Image 1: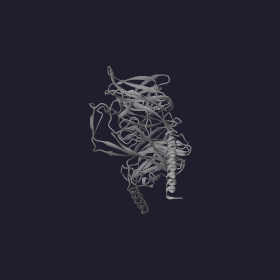
Image 2: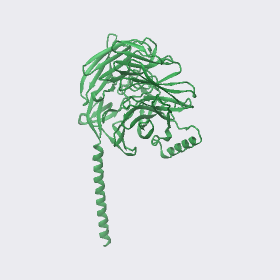
Image 3: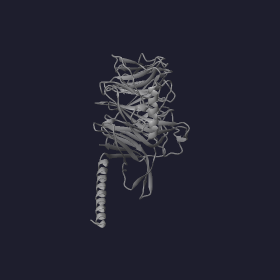
Image 4: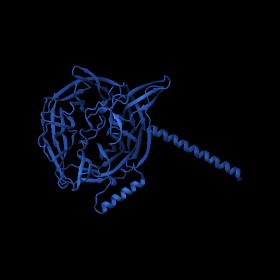
Length: 540
């Protein structure tokens, strides 16, 4: 074979190789694009004077959009509640009239009803307006009551015609139960004690509810307590477990008895620090002695993946050395938990890492009745500030530059961590998703996840796109992907989209909803419009 023939043969092989690569890439792109689709989109034009919507999931029954209209009748303020079905079609709109000085504190969905709580700001113990809305019967009931005590609410949930409020009487925790049928309320006994801190109040699937408390102020005598009550407020069980000396429970959340076992998980630290050093888990068993399982962040396989490899190596090596010589690990993180999901194989615990910059400068809403960093869209189970996640702090209209006040806090969302516990509450594995640059005026949920027997997908919203990270069932990361949802009208493009007041949430099954505010530009008519939108997303 001469040199010319040899070169031709090499060129032919290169051509075939390139062709095979293109085919593989094409088939891979088809495979990836088939894994996420957008079945529906909802749009509602947003005016400068409009407030933002609170988005409430009703699972397979759709979504509820709640908004203050800034319209008044006498001494009452008008609120609208728009109901969407799972195809994102408007099916009904309810109207509420609430006393002028009241603002929305929280919301809940239970047994086909939406519940909204209103109270005057800075008015502990004053009248509460609890709205009960049923989109099926298209009925609205508004319950008003006075707690009878000067209670500052921190938690709220509903079950079986009972509203459960957690909070504090000065510095002592309290549970208040309001009966929607009889319009009576009462303080549940045994909670109002000076040596207790309320961590969580959560209803179970069997019409009971849990309260998680920490007993003791010193580092040597603390106990983690879980109590389960029936629908009348009668305590069914109590489990007290000693907190290891030198450690402090910062946050705690319970599962909801989808499984027979009840899990408590959250964050812990050393001493009196408020920066978490790791996560803990405890499977409740009041009939046997138990110990809390503590896991420092450096011991998790993927928690530190948002850092550079060399830094990860240094942190892990230092943490291992300090544990070997019996000293506390030094690494701390701004990690906060979001939710627990229960499966046949155990429990999944989702949390996110934040960096809060108190010296930044940004503008926010002057329509701010309640201080604190709360999102109406997320589900943060912990009372990290004054109110938990279901409690609402209105945001600035992203299109209204005239209605603002100067903010000095900026939250950087850094990373999502998904931690798996087995049926015994022991750590199995963990996954993580590094966020793109996300800066928010408040601490909000940024990510969510889907898991089945074959894979786990972590998702977050990156302005116009959705970022996805896939992992095999054994926890091995396989790939990352991006998906850009489509718009409703031809010739329109996204001119801008705000990071504030937007996000992605698990809806039902393998569906998610993505919401936010966009400025859309028609490139043919040269016209722009501002919209609130919801996209329905399906992952396969």
